[in-house]
Image (cartoon, rainbow, N blue to C red; front, side, top):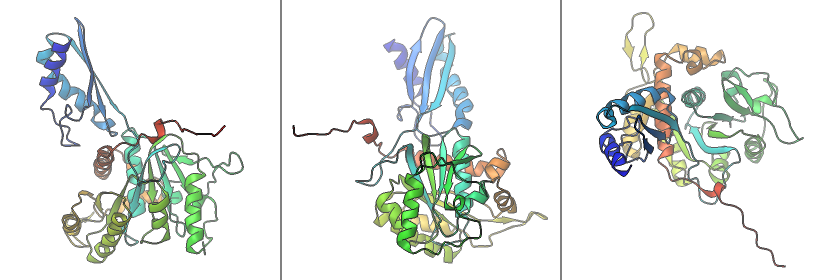
Length: 363
């Protein structure tokens, strides 16, 4: 058995995971190598959701093992195993949630909420269990984007609420608890308390990722998030426009100061393609996110076009990834989602939830 394991490992040593840039062997994704007279089998366990990749991985491994199998049937099982990863020091993990990803922007109007909704759907489409917390208390938009406007969460015990679900995504928002035209005239402490209640009083059901759609800016909500919410990492959404990049830089520096890792940048509205003639034009500038990424040593995880279909789909309550899951725009969101999940998967794991609590009593 040791010999066949060595032969299999050698045959697979050069296979590189296109999402991580590392070999499957070095990432310890190849497990449970087994061989009988008729079957050669193994498991490939990824640290991130990538259901759309599974078939390609099976084919790639099958070709690589053809000679080693020596006539045996090759049986390859591919799966994803998503674990909890490190957060800010001293902040406990949230029950029912493995990883929290904050989606932020320095200013409004850059498509942050639309990006958050589509990333959540893309992660779910790749096989993860995903939720969205709409942290914009003053201007909640996720109920409309997720097709849940007018819905109310179910209260289970007089305090806890069940998340409102659509498109396979667990969601919570202040928009479910107030009338659509009601203005939230609250000071900062009340807003911060509302965020914590929405987060902690919701019975999240075994989420791999909770996406928090932050309001624009660097105010009370962002500070509360950094100090009291176990955030695995943050994404910064911007456009190529200089004025948007100025505020995006402030958002990035804020997360750095409070010890929340930056997973990367997402450039929205990068290019406009005329629906009539096909002419391409960089309406908001070109290369801004790349320059910012170089300045702060982070990565641009993807660029999205200025496409009327993205806006229409969100307004109709069926974001692009749900409305056209095999389309060109959805494929961009899915590629970004895999990169985000890979960044999370590369962080140190958090094992605190696996250890029992020890109570010392003086009898």
